[in-house]
Amino acid sequence: QVQLVESGGAVVPPGRSLRLSCAISGFNFNLYGMHWVRQAPGKGLEWLAVMSFDGSHIYYGDSVKGRFTISRDNSKSTLYLQMNSLRFEDTAVYYCAKDLRGGSYSLIFESWGQGTLVTVSS
Amino acid sequence: DIQMTQSPSSLSASVGDRVTITCRASQSVSNFINWYQQRPGKAPKLLIYLTSRLQSGVSSRFSGSGSGTDFSLTINSLQPGDSATYYCQQGDVTPCSFGQGTKLEIK
Image (cartoon, rainbow over all chains, first blue to last red; front, top):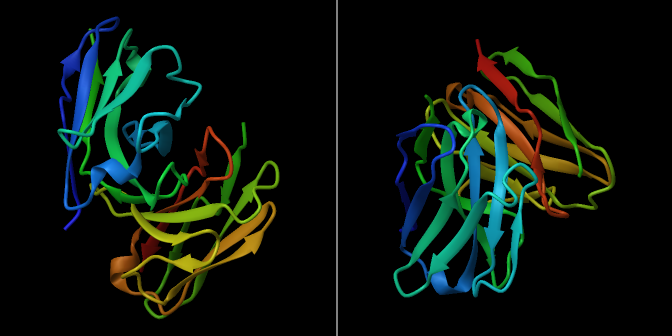
């Protein structure tokens, strides 16, 4: 059974950093691209970043480019999102998602975690 | 970047009805459109990918169609459990983008 479990959400003041983790089980993590998607309270979905199965292809959404970094440790079946220079508008539930296709990525989000809440507040 | 516009933003329908949600892209996305269902307090769930392909385990009451810039999601024989917000998403190019969502209420 595919499982994605996010952790690391917290309440942080503006300007601080935070690292989110997504622990994977139930499929061969090494073979799939992975994504981060967020949802601000009461708002829609915003794609943030993708990393291919081997880390060779990485792309970011415009709102987080230069501040957030996606990474993965295939030996630990874990995906990460390093978030720096956090802003009030980064307050959201952050989801990790498994790409549908093996190999690089397809931008189709097959499975999702339950999300972890990040609140940026002074 | 490609902008996705869904309509309507919300709708109300009765059990057994058929509803259609539309999604328009600001430029052609070929057939790279996916649809998700999000129930309150839950993570999104993939329903349809590549315009019309039904995700494994999803009811055949859901179907998708379209091409280029105009797409639709149709739900037949509405059930109470279909009450949710539905999102389209273009997966043609990065950054990929979602529509603003359509909230479906079952009367």
